[in-house]
Length: 85
Image (cartoon, rainbow, N blue to C red; front, top):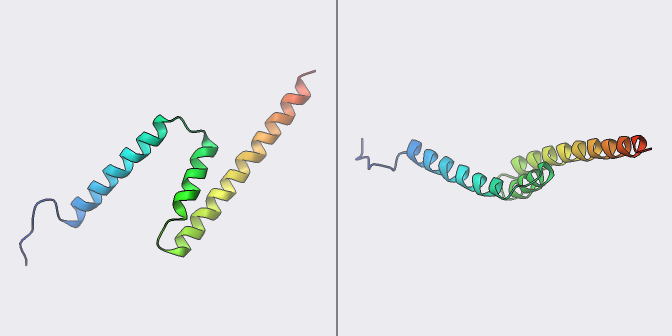
């Protein structure tokens, strides 16, 4: 068994990366993005993953959710037009 230095264990590295990721997300959320913008950000980030199969799965999921949001938005706009009489 080798000498373990403080802060270099796998758990410590994972915790540090998780904390940094939360800070990045917090900064993004401070900008006040819409739900659609959050999906665009997730889509763009997922294209940078190292494993192509993970990238494809996330891009597909983001696209699917984005399409659903657009459909709901379109339906809401149509209902508003109908009730504006």
